[in-house]
Image 1: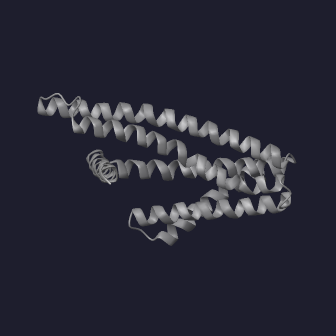
Image 2 (image 1 turned 90 degrees about the vertical axis):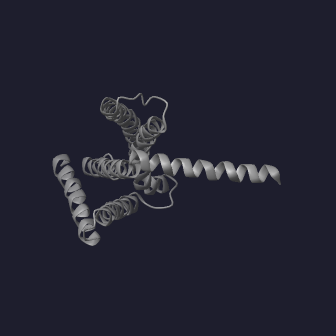
Image 3 (image 1 turned 60 degrees about the vertical axis):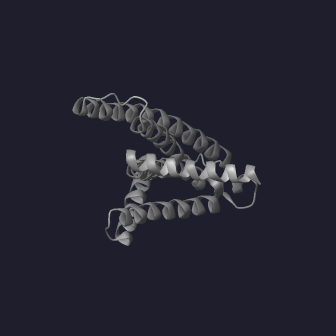
Length: 204
């Protein structure tokens, strides 16, 4: 019983500390921006891959799935490293400015720990966003490999999933900035599909 109480107390303290650090480093705002931006990149990358494969006549489901997963993994690794380096530099600059303004050493303080946590979590979110959207868009091709659906059905279903994700990202962005969510959802959807159409024209 005492062990359960200790674990519960530890989890509550961890939750409180995480919320405090997140608020201190403005993690929510930064993470939200990175997630939407890189999720959008992931969707468009897979849309371009799928459209190009079908137009060029190389739409083997195994090839599309393998290429898509490779692309998603590359974007994830690139996203993590890029965000980590950029955020680390930016957070370090902010801390140095605070130190100069207040004439104190911030190393090891709660603010320093909050900034370090923000850097790691932002990089993780930057990595996971394109990976999630890419894998969701590629699920129909995994079904096609298992002969559950046809290749054309996989293409159609994948386009529907991509369209839904584009609209959802725009809708969410509209709610965040206090604008009309439906309008932003439609704008994001149109932009995404326009990019896909452009890729199809170039591949033709």
